[in-house]
Image (cartoon, rainbow, N blue to C red; front, side, top):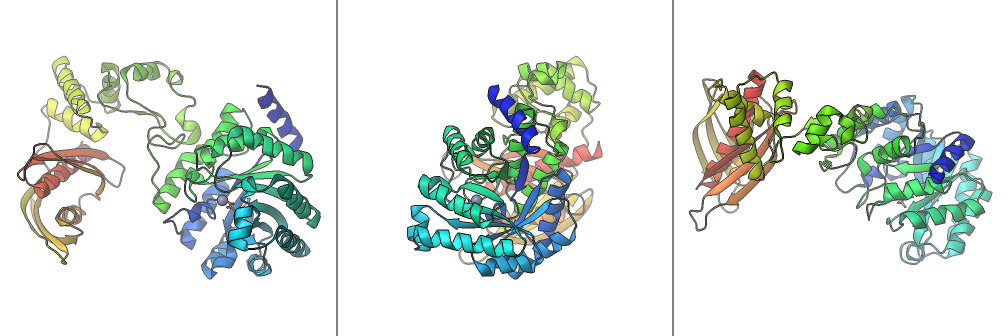
Length: 508
Ligand code: KIV
Ligand code: ZN
């Protein structure tokens, strides 16, 4: 508690804690992520709406595309400071100046590994390059933040020397990167406290998440006097990523009680947007923004939450723009099911309720989740109100072999109209599912979220059980399952089963 009070006091002295977002630079370095200029612009706008202090928008020297994005983001007239990355190299700094950026984050590797294997330069050469680059940037009126890359594996004496030299050359901020995420909270605190004793400039931290400690380490750095943290949305970045923006912000706001000037209600939307644009899906249990961050299934928890949500929630989901979810499965209690049916205005008698309850428990016992669409399909069937299936399979043929694309021809009856198409895929199942997806497009846009197959008997005529989850353009999800001897038929039946459930909730 003392530390918390210290931090609050310190916040008053420093006036503010700075949030430096590097989603567009270090986040984009996550394997497989390449953002278009338009996507960068949209993310920058959202970060600005959230209220981050600084946006690192890229590394202008690496490409014309990076420069172009930097220029266009600058033209948006955002409130946040706009920063570009640069090595301690004149050409890199010129690229930044070309984009009219006035904030530079410059870095060079300082650890023995970086000096000997990557740069093949002596300590002195690296220090001189640093000083020259900072002086050059300062001569051009650029706010300069200096990073000693791999600081946490650099000899402490040399780290202090190079940081002091950077300060003397005019660096405005000193940034401490834990490039391969080797700190633990206590070493983060000690390191920052030591640097704080030695340096005059504000200290920033840039912690990677290789051992899942980046947020905890950043918080400890703040307790030791750091003033700024580098963060990324959803914690995306190289390898295990960076400290997560949403987890760090919410820890400061809720656990430390710091009054940050950010609109936390934007966090879920921002996370979802970045996840969709980068293709990096969040695990359901991702704190703050994961699908299950405010979901409750067990009877005891749901009962508590229905009486008072705070019983099993640290914060109301609305604070981060998320929503509460009562999930159904094998732990579901009668209270939860009643609440869920109420939510959908479904009324039923005791017998019907027991039948729905039993079916949900049976599905849950099989280890399957039960989506809202599943519940509605089960409920309308129990009420005797189930409509006939909207989509029926009329025919299927597949062609597959070595060195040829698999092709499937599928014929469906969709709302009394026959439709047929042929599509290719990486295998016959993929081809058949592509054909279904194409044929139902006029009715609904289906994505296959999950596909699992299991042989439930042995031998070449084994029964295959396929379990799928599909979703539509409105985020409705439904499970589907089918058991057949033919894997392709089982897959097609399972997908149609799930699409029919989604259509059932759309119509109800
Ligand atoms: O992790 C790191 O060391 C970096 C540098 C560019 C500061 O991202
Ligand atoms: Zn980094």
